[in-house]
Length: 197
Length: 433
Image (spheres, rainbow over the protein chains, first blue to last red):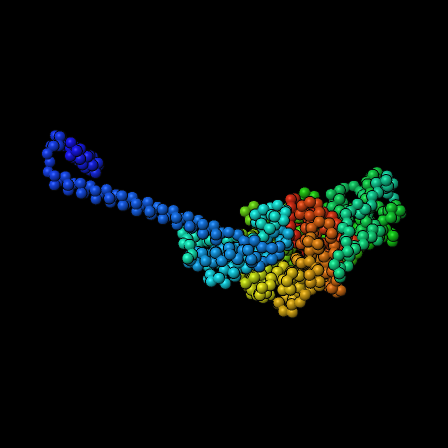
């Protein structure tokens, strides 16, 4: 009885493995069969199953690795894009922003293909044209800091928006503080980033 | 003899209702207090008469805005007596010293300036005014207004001029009396730093694009623009023509900081760097009218202040004195057309105010105190200064007479900034716009 079940199960498996391309024999399978053939069939079946399982595991692992890499890239991108702010009419890097820039430098050094654009911005209280120079100086400041950390200067491009593109158009201390900033944007090599050691 | 008696009750004296900034005592070394002294200006009347209504109203306003006269307005109620001799006695009784008479002569108009005390015509000119709906009409009237000012004072007025400015990122021009605002650029382009060429035929401006800016030379006659080749890359702005119109000095920001360069815009060649500011910025050049010197802003001593150098970049020195730590930052210098003064703005108690520096005495004088006031630009008469002020609640153009302190608003739409005043338009130059 148990054996019969196995034979049936095996034939179902064979049918399934063959994907129905092999027509069902017209006569019922004989009860007594060659046990060697069955064993051979079972061996083959278990190998196929194991291979499928391994392929599935590999696919899943690859997917997970990709997701993890994407997650890292997203996280590192956010770290590179994280803005820094400045005091009124100043362009020197504030102490609280040094860790932020250190991290950007490490990420850039771990990812040679990355190129960076730093855009300096000013609040509206300054003189319109002077603010373009001030924004430029703020962008230069961050670039100089990164270069001092070991990043190749040719990978960094600076621009200035002066007061032309405020984040917050309100005329409040809070808004002005937000608007005095450097923005960072990767212009190349940003599709996949590896974390620095 | 004409019969003007019916006009008498309509006499008004202009100038009594104008605004004026009271200047508080600030900053050591600042000579404060503008004395507005009505009454020392000669009284002038534009004679009423048939026709010429639009000419007369533009003329009257120009002469008022010149701040050289007190205008007496006389209504027209005459009985059609033909032109003959002027009733000098009547106008003398009104206190007028000068009278302007317009009389038709064939297709032309004779403009006469009467010296009422002497009882004679002092100067006259025959003008053919374009029809009032022609685009050249207003400028033609402005030009005769400037002549009348010159006949009386020896110095031309500034009516025949225009201002360029930036409004909603576009480049605009407007006549000196605030009429005819015309936009010269489209919505697809963000404009900064316009500056007139001395002949009024070109305007240079910055086309700002994603943190970069090229200098565009706009030819007003055809409306075409040319990119100045040395400014194709980087951020280029705050430019100024040399008085001969051949050279353009401009500011360039980028790797290595912000410095002043000059380029020959006749041949588009011969780029030269005028300042080398390691860790200091140099910007906003303005030429002296003899073309030999350039005033500019520099941060070499820390806070931005006004410096001067020879036009080749040598002999750089501080121009407008300041007390370190006490005097606020100073910006946006513009040399006056007569060469005697430099206007600029300086932070006073955290807000910008317009100042003029007298070059002979090296003393600065504060011109404004109400609201935030910045980016001064000289009228062609070397006496009036236009600037951006928030005194009305938003950034608008205002004009101050540096002699009397009289201030008026120039009518412009929306919020405006970065004005540049043209030189006087003579002949037909720049009229067709």
